[in-house]
Length: 183
Image (cartoon, rainbow, N blue to C red):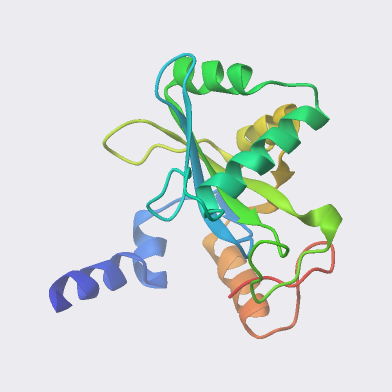
């Protein structure tokens, strides 16, 4: 176990990133909620999951609240679950969200009512190896289906990324629009 942790730390160290990666780099904000995955089991069957659950229990579970928010977002832009399901199925992708709803479950960062809901954080292709969409493509999908948009920045160099991360870490900045960031 320690060897794996050591290897992981070595591959994500600033030195390893400088040696093994090239820009541009995308840095996305981490919203302060709980993870929700939405995928298509078939062209007509959508699944919403979170915290090892797909909902359906007596007490509202994270997956069920995620489905409620899904319906709310879709209705605001006159879209249907079937439309989303077909897109996810046809492209063989899974949508990754952060559910932020202080009425359901409070976290450290407060979300006023107008900022609550499902933040589309990523879209992953359904493959064995991680294969994720670029942030701009994720943003366009969020807009098309009425989801909350996860903010991101693009930096040309690793030095720019590290400078930004140090600034955030040291508390010298908060989110692009003055909001607090998790972590």
